[in-house]
Length: 191
Image (cartoon, rainbow, N blue to C red; front, side, top):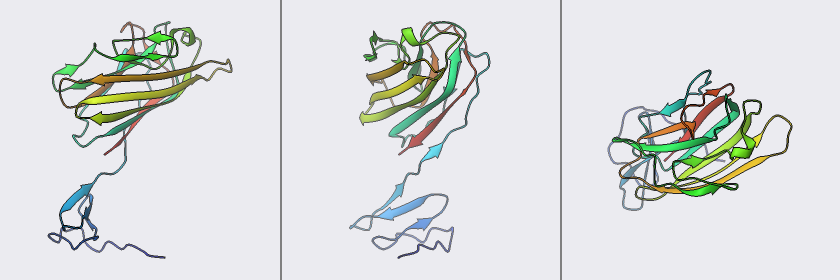
């Protein structure tokens, strides 16, 4: 069994092949002794909406390649499905999404709850995974389930090519006026 001990928080220059060093981040080297930062998994801040039409996560790092959006007993005050929209420094993009949530097509965002499963009396729990395919192209896969004891899954799969680098993510309703309320939402980002 090997044990890794970090003895300094100061960079030591270009380390030998296979070494790690710490200065708020972990670094590794390849066979050419080129240092590269190893990105860690970062948990965002959980948000518990009470009367909000949107939840925005801004300032996403340039190194992000995967985002997991976690929903716990979330619901709305109406019947408009929940969706996720991606954004760049120019703002959130509200067109050009291709895919389906169960039987519901959408072009305005990654719809993560189908219309038949949403109401002010139901809650949803589950996760959505958003992956970088290449460049500014992102794909989405998610499963949310009604958490009120009634059978009903929402399974989604989408793609979206952004006009620039991803910098933000929005959770909202399709109509943009129904309120998100109850439960909580959080994101987990990976490089």
